[in-house]
Length: 431
Figure 1 (cartoon, rainbow, N blue to C red):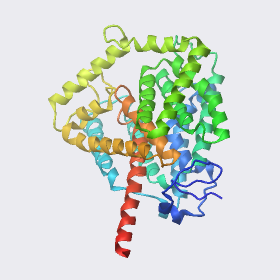
Figure 2: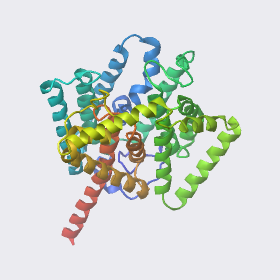
Figure 3: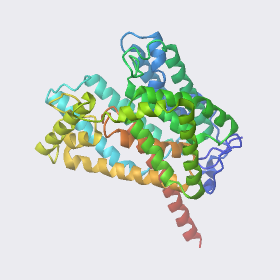
């Protein structure tokens, strides 16, 4: 029988952890058998659910955006149901999320002012912008971050394995048109950037669970090479840099023998890739990265114009900002940090900066502690990846992965720190 705890697991997971059981003693006997509506499923859907089903949607509902909307509605419903099924005594809350909530208010105010007072057109339209921001970002972030204490390893591995299966099946169903648009792997419902990031998210997950159990190791060995091919042939430089950067930081933050084993494992994987592909995949990655030149590459050139325009708008209104989009290109600037400055100014960006600092502190603490559960470690690594990727991709209103991972990372870390503080107070009183 599972003893539901962030830091204690049943024999079926066998993720040897230690030390933190007392925080979750009151959870003994709590088992959520509704895996499809578990907090872990809600978390997995939030970080990679939309694009996991993109291939299936592209195959069976290719016309319009009905299929994609239905997927997002289903994800929102699963999140809401999973939250409702968790007893209120098992939900958590931390004051460390206050800066994020303040920034949400500032940024929402700017969107409302731009759209309904200044009559500014924000692509892809106010319904989509407010829908994505309020449902996929704000609501999902607040609900999932309050369920950190009931995200079980077994539920999370089930959810991630299932979603990865749907992702790969969807691509297989569309195998005849994956390269229809050119040399980059893409579909109508999932662009190369999203495809690369989604595949890399699953790669990170399998890198963390490989070796934990025999079953998970077998699944990782089967799926990882396929995911690696998808990452490479999507030819997304952002996915390359953000994913590899997150894994590198994770390895560097590990302590002692864990770091040694991780480095040795990375060299082994690299050697296998080189031997099995004849350096072809490496050549593809290097060739793609060498195109980062604003004078040659159109994508880089466009982003350079976005950044310059966003910075000029910030300098025009440095304290409070003015517009939620870069006015010259009439789109978000593909850098959420510049977007924050130009939207709400330096003053409005202070809580955003505080939130990022808290999330980074939490991620470092979780990884270096070496005793947190799979969900916490996966969230921390994915947050680092999202923080890097957000330098060149995504928007504040639509970057649900960034908001969910950053908030949940903080909840894991500061929730445990609060438990330690209460324990020390009780010990001091008793003595």
